[in-house]
Length: 61
Image (cartoon, rainbow, N blue to C red; front, side, top):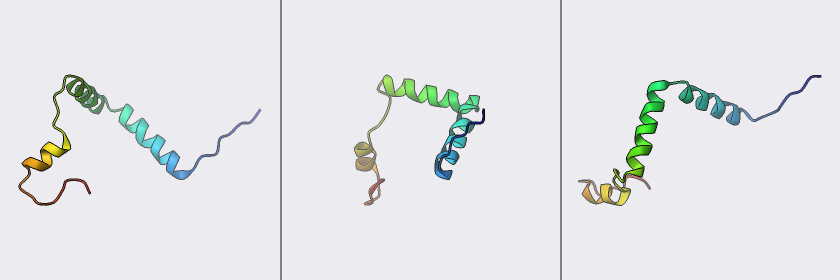
């Protein structure tokens, strides 16, 4: 029995990118450390970054 699934090219590219990230042990370690930092409250909110920035532009529009 033959089966197949049709997905958009965007979805396919997204899946490839996800697999690439998941297969990179160093990157996965960095992601895990970032999650731990966030859970422990070790982060700076965007508003605080913008307030302390020397620029009159916002970081995200």
